[in-house]
Image (cartoon, rainbow, N blue to C red):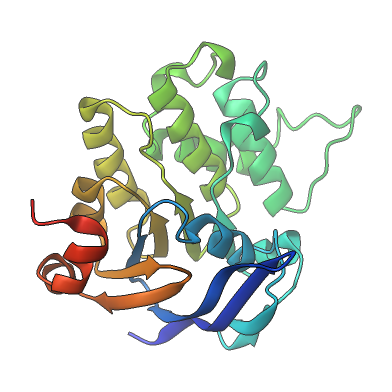
Length: 247
């Protein structure tokens, strides 16, 4: 597998507070790569930089051989990298189907217009229906988001991410707050929808990490402590000392 995303010596300071102090790692095409580490390690800041929300203080990000450092989020999205939305960014009073369709429309370059309803665009509706079924929301697709369970809302978040047809997906703690049953369903769904795509996932739940990841990188005090295969990370004493413990 070829190198797809390369994070090169990324630093990030906030008014003198050093959050990232030289992050280096690479993600190969069709690889599932987990980023783990204690709270405050800089994981979400790193995601914000990769996805274009923040600019790095220094360093470079190469995606498919292209330098995307400092580019805005919508440009990064158009070239195939999509980060999961937060629930607060969805339209609570619209249906599941309508929320996902809005993302599909943006992928097709169709902006909302009051007099041009998308209801009869067969191609867009078929693609929307496929995503709804892919994330397991067919039975609730015509319900407003406001009545969904927490697990269903997180599935919708992933569905909206898929609506732009990304090649590389970033998921930030997709199972946070879920019950064990919901987590098991989420693992199976993420495994299914990321098949054939590259994935970077931030996650504290080690069941999720070890179920999904091909490679794991441990972020500790703003830098990568170690990267390796799941069994290597599980048995690495540095990782046990810094994060996993001996349990």
